Length: 67
Image 1 (tube, rainbow, N blue to C red):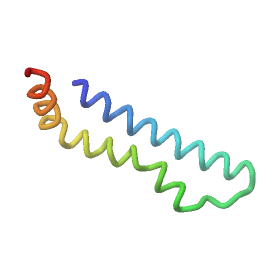
Image 2 (image 1 turned 90 degrees about the vertical axis):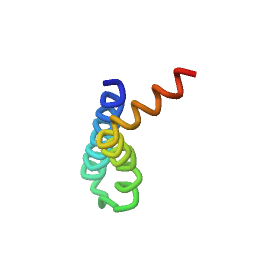
Image 3 (image 1 turned 60 degrees about the vertical axis):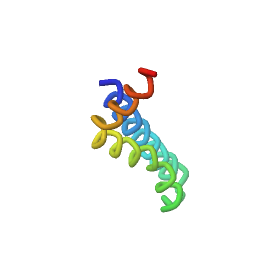
Image 4 (image 1 turned 60 degrees about the horizontal axis):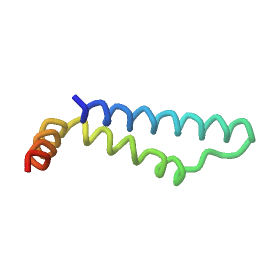
């Protein structure tokens, strides 16, 4: 459950960052560039991967914490 929460938080954070970047660029009449959008979308990709692999990540964390 915690892994899914972290994945959702990463995706939400990335979406907010992208939206704020677009709003600021439109406010200042600047073009929206591709490279900053790609950099700001890295947490979104990480969140999607974590959400897809959440069961195996949770099992791996559980094994590491059992000692």
